[in-house]
Length: 348
Ligand code: SAH
Image (cartoon, rainbow, N blue to C red; front, top):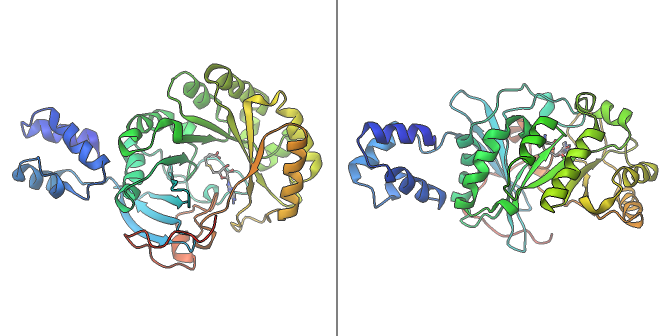
């Protein structure tokens, strides 16, 4: 819901100021529309229905994976595609992955989002409306990551404004993560505020030459400078920075790369590495074998670097990391998402 439009409309209708809060509270709790807001006068509900769309996003399509992951494709009012995903885990975690931009202007060579046209930054309301869509499907949502389309640090003001509102939906800032390629001005802005939001860095290669090859942004903001900002984040907040490392067969997955990474992250206390099995995107890369990923993790652990391997979810509906590219829903072998949650995944 466009909160500014809502406030303007309420003012034009001569409504008291507290109405905006009332309406937001209903919305944040997962109401399906104005008609459910029983403490608003009926005429006002009808008026709002006409004048303030309940969501800034129009649902175009959705799909549900065998593992319960749900992916949704939306359009903004100006027809920009936006995708978001919700992952469900057996321990009750409901984790929403939202987009911060329509498309992405960066051109990481392995990522599908980079291959589609860049649209624009999403507004705060467009970010929140992705989370609210899932809130309406599944009342209990509790984690959120900015790991969908786009580079959140290029849209940091709207990302932080969304973070301010997420606790109303049930997602605390401690359970919110912003992931970046290392867009330094954004990280500096992020460091200058004091919300306890988690920072994650997509690192993917310790060697500067290799990193520049797969992530051209590395030429603009060298890793050395980015890691200084990450260490500052840890020193000031005592929250570890998560290092994302996508495992590309024959590219960055040799044990020598693991040793380089361990060395680069010395001293280790500021970081935790999350190895990401690569999800195929048709960009010409293969994912590393499970055994290779295991050997890589063991080198890191042996060198004293905390490291885990990320669970892959939603691959069958192209909802996994890096697979968000707006036309993917039609292409994937899917079954439509149902409003009810269905059975939880059999294993994790
Ligand atoms: N632009 C931000 C936010 C997107 S997060 C960032 O890059 O951090 C998406 C995460 O998924 C990033 O770590 C990205 O590198 C990773 N990723 C991209 N393509 C992938 C793929 N095909 N398989 C697995 N992970 C991928």
